[in-house]
Image 1: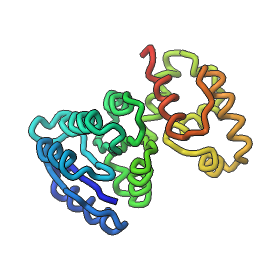
Image 2: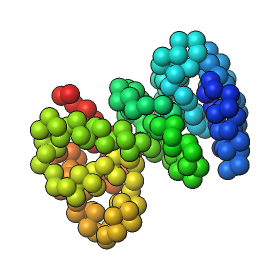
Image 3: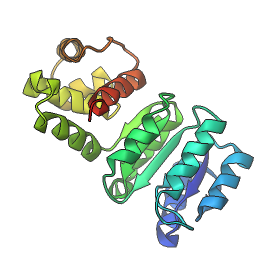
Amino acid sequence: MRVVLAEDLFLLRDGLVRLLAAYDFEIAAAVESGPELTRALAELRPDVAVIDVRLPPTHTDEGLQCALAARRDRPGLPVLVLSQHVEQLYARELLADGNGGVGYLLKDRVFDAEQFVDAVRRVAAGGTAMDPQVIQQLLSRRSAADRPLGGLTPRELEVLELMAQGRSNAAIAGQLVVTERAIAKHTSNIFAKLGLEVSDDDNRRVLAVLAYLDRDR
């Protein structure tokens, strides 16, 4: 699997290259700036891109803007974005086109090799990998505003959070130590309460839930 990596900090970039290579990823390019990233994505057409949000020359949202432009040119290009902090606008903007194959992780997650590599693989396969802290903030924002999310039970909120991270019913059941049938029931109740179409497609479920959480902000 070919990866284009964009990270301006040398030590972190080198560490990510070594980590991905150890898990049999092919590093097509490892770059440190927005212009280099734009060229690499256009010329190398990787299977997945792992991109820091903030890159030179602007050190603002250069990496994200390069990723969005690349996905406009090549819809569905798998992109996993890394950020130092929870910045909900970036998560919403990345998910806005609805094509899937996207992820948003805090850089702290990089230090858990298994979790990070699993996220890269999930995104490369067209799935979604959202950082739990991003999901928690979206959920708490909706709950604090006393919107329809407040109609969910505590268990349904727990299932919704795990669902929004990109987990399947089987994975959620394993996490909560309950049966898959119980999770299926919770999922149906959640979609019914939120007025969302029921779907077994993990990526569509995540996008639908996040779209709901983001509307009428």
